[in-house]
Amino acid sequence: MILTGLGDEISPQLKEQLKVMRGEGIKYLEIRGVWGKNILDLSFPELERVRRELEEEGFKISAIGSPIGKIKITDDFEEHLKKFQKALDIAKALHASYIRIFSYYIPTQEKPDKFREEVIRRMEKKLRLAEKEKIILLHENERGIYGDLPERCRDILQYFNSPNLRANFDPANFVFEGVKPYSQAYPILKDFIAYVHIKDAKRSPQGIVCVPAGEGEGEIPQILKDLHQNGYNGFLSLEPHLAQAGRLSGFSGPEGFSIAARALKKILDQLKISYE
Image (cartoon, rainbow, N blue to C red; front, top):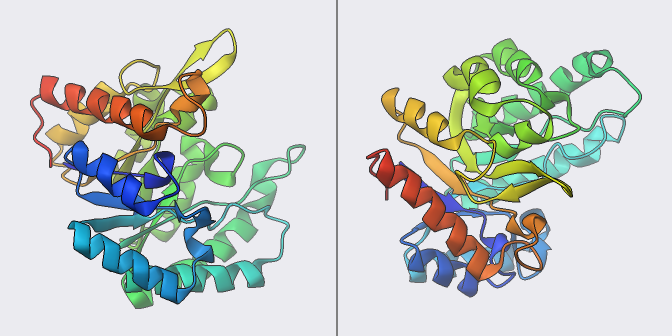
């Protein structure tokens, strides 16, 4: 399996992101933000700077951690589609095969099924563009979107049944939805998984908080063991969010990211799963 991570959990500065990740033996970056900007807000000269720094440091991009689909299902889609086209352009510029996407926030008082047709319409437009560019879209199960529960994630993925639309499996996000990631979500989605976010979570007196892999209710060791037995050799992307556990300010910071990386590597070592 291949280790990667969201570098802006470490620092806004790209050099600091890469320094910390290299220190943990990681050579891939899931790029979501640098220099205080979201990846989609970078100019093409800034993207060239990113490409150059990655090349100088010997890093490659595992995925574009885009916010595509993180708008209300009732928001204007045409402007959002233009942003998606930029995401495709960025993926090509940085030689990335994957773009992370979401399936739109649903009004809290409404039933998600009411918006299924519109979700499918929007997803299809993006998928057809991605297919032309030979880019794989990774749908992440996010709280509050149409695809927040495993059954609705599967609904989207089965409907299209395309190699260019797969699942980015996020265990902690299922914990936040009251779903057991391995026992309940994984059996439903295992055939669609092409990318995994390593983020764990557990209940606490303060509510549900994120913790290092293996310390929460994300059932991460069971998921990794089953993925390994089924031949998965893709990315494991660290998105620790450890600040939510009261450990650090900001997101995870350099220290928190290293704590998260070492927790993941400990699990992999215990399971005798090789990684790079």
